[in-house]
Image (cartoon, one colour):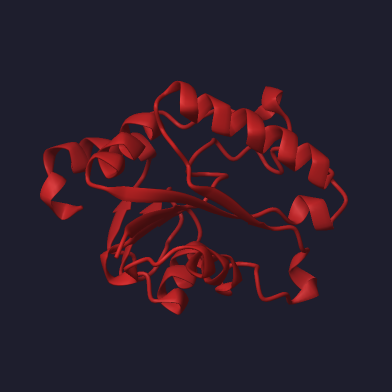
Amino acid sequence: MQKALFLDRDGVINIDHGYVSTVEEFEFTEGIFDLLRLFLAKGYLLFIVTNQSGIGRGYYSEEDFFTLTSWMLNEFKKEAIEIFSVHYCNHAPEENCSCRKPATGMVDAILKERTISLKNSWLIGDKQSDIDLAHNAKIAHTIAIGERDIRSATLSFKTILECKLFLEQNRDKI
């Protein structure tokens, strides 16, 4: 079975400026490309799982999201990084859908496409709902990013760069 790295987008892949929806607003986090290469070298498939309530709230359109996602995936390709798929929840929180993190709908959709060993997989997020998604979906290992107080993550770092530097020196952890 394949192992996977599940990634949140805003706050992990890019700096979270609040409802990022255009290329001009999008800024990759320092170290993200090298961090993802570490996981790729260990045989992980990469998936993005992202809440995009800005769509449900009318701040930007689904088309805006697709345009930005296409650009982002092309930037990853330029860096020899393949993202297997991007899954998103476009609902506002009050809609109580089954796809908004910490619900498992996005991971469930991925598991319909691929056979993934969740006990050998990781999730990287910057909010408690990301880490809770991992626990709810039975993803064994988690990395919390940022300065928020996030409970029950396997590893925690202030920045993606800090995470990358740690894992470069501790490759056996992944």
